[in-house]
Image (cartoon, rainbow over all chains, first blue to last red; front, side, top):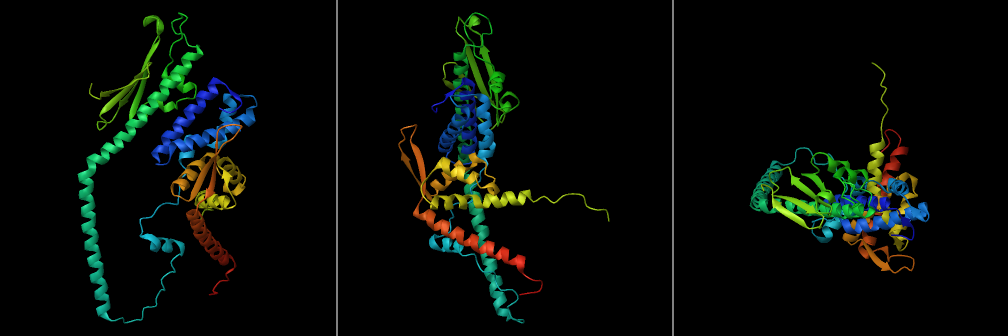
Length: 261
Length: 121
């Protein structure tokens, strides 16, 4: 953090904001960690300048209002990209806009054999394109399971990352010692709704399925757990194609179960 | 015929135009010299008509770096973490020249239509 002091609420809000940015930017295929790191520096600098010696949640929210929501940040769509066109030929084609083909310059009554040649060339090209398309379809069908596995793996990594972020936030809430459900003097973990209220999680996590998973959190008060507070947060898939459900508890260990267990 | 009361909305058009020039604007800015990422964001945000949402610049710069159009270097700072400075790579200079050339052609052509008299070649 910058030289300014930040309130715990502001710290948690920033971490939640950056976690959402990472998840969304990663989905877009860009470098999530680099983007989040640079955003953190930007926000810390702006908030420090605005907040003086102490940065509050209100001041942080004002800064994020100018920086943009996670959805807005991740929506930046780069238009420059790599082309698969061969070498310089492709670049030259991009550098000099092609002059429009002259219209109506073909003399009337062009000889018939030239049109027939074009027709045969187009037919051959069409046949070649069909063969290529069939080959691509066969390749995709053959590799479909691999593609599906890659997609599922990416989702699973995001779910594990989200569970770990929830665990980290629960630890911070515990350190605040503000939530003692059973009144035994030992602080307890908070509910999913409380994490949403702090701004760490978006409301979607406390409602129906977020993405393809439903998140639930069960907090065990210390008095009913031998004096030790506990919690279990589960991510349960809503699609049959997703094989696993995930859980994290107060120890921070992520457990994976088959969705049918 | 009933009079049309809907207003014509050009906001989508201006939004698309701005999206199209933002990366070129970043490249042109970096062509003036090495800049800290924060400074790039602030200079772009100061151009009112670009209507830049500050956070959106960072993923674009990350992408430009991944494409090899910009280079970065870390400079240690006594007042905080090391700062990352951006500068154009030789490939970035080449692409910038191509984009500026197309931009000049396009804007000149569009501008010429504004003074073209009806029926004139």
